[in-house]
Figure 1 (tube, helix red, strand yellow):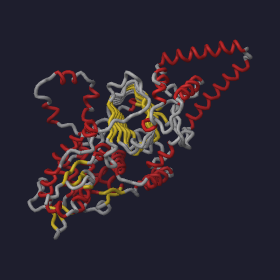
Figure 2: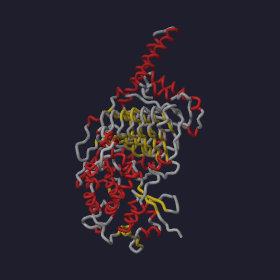
Figure 3: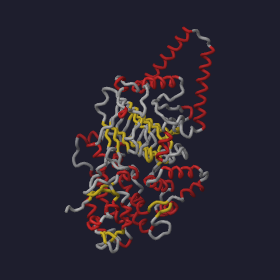
Figure 4: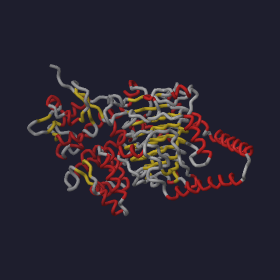
Length: 591
């Protein structure tokens, strides 16, 4: 009879969404986490659940972290905890009703996390720690590739480690390299020596293996169903291989560690497999001649929830629009997109923009993180649980978010503005991922600087109301949302109303001029001429033209399964509508 074997791999989401893409504070090193692991087992309110008040006491009083940084880690971990949308909406409502810092703190005190998993989460922040050995040794010999890479900007050089959050090979390496320390944090204080060495007869309780399921999952040789590691190790054949004792209900720490090293493998749902064997993602709006370099792949047809990946690379001079079940719940990566207009109007799990340039990205509600890294001149419009921006310049972000936008080092000339658009199913999508319109902290960014000085506050500005314009999503579909969810902040609403009054006054001026038919025709031609000249001068003509590709007939006859939107509108009609509204000065020039 064939022996039961297992394959274990690192889960993608804790590394992708949990590890901040920046070097962690020095106080989160193993030395201090080892002390914390002992401390939490001896204090009330710390084990097996860690309350916010006790974590704040440890972080601020023992580790000397700032309170806002302590809450950042606590809140980030909580984003990884599976919760029903209704529960998230109730939490958002409770936070929005907290009118003072004291009431807010009282509400936060109701939040608790699994202590052992939180220890693993804090240790996992070492993923993006710069290796002193690597930085000192570098490559053995110079190469053409290394010479060319040396010409890249200092900003990109400093943030090269950020790719580890998506790199499934880096996840395996991290677990293999640090497995003994990860298990040590889960062990009782008496099970390891003072130097951190595992004792010969050290034991690990089953509850500790349950905590390990934050990072590891797998399947057996007899099935393709994916299970968290503690579920796999509840099976008798695997228990014996991993050193489980039915008498003490514990695992031999040494045998378990050896078994994990033998069974650890690459995540079969990771980005490597997706790029190698994933399916292509089709859409209707395509421009001839710009498709050769585009690489779009997905694993959503095979991946389990939490491991769904969609990768879009090198989208160049394209208008890409998609509202599809294939996107729902997916972790999306937009890589090196340039001069593109991308609309992903579905509820998403997470989105990463990496090294994108001169593009506009409009997203459906994002359940966890939107991360902008090493981007330039990107306009982003999103509703998300958390917004993170690092090493980016001249980007404008219009966001609706219940958490403070996190600004990592290396940013310059960022602009933060309120969320300013809608599409018919937006509010339904928001409800499905548990995102509400309040609280909305888009204009209260947190500048991250754990050990050194915080980023320069001049790296960002809040969009002045006089520069504010609404945005129109140029696609039609069925739904109930007909305005910006939650409305606009008062100053921005007043700016919109003032602009509308100016348009009305202009229309009255034209009407009162009593032009005859020929004069009206000449006047209309002059206005349209000036408007088209403006479109060419500002580059906005490209986006309007891309809404109707050269092969209009072919695009309109595309099968609905490959259609950009749930209902295919007349694209020329949409283009004309957006043009008229832009000409009237009522919408954003980037439509």
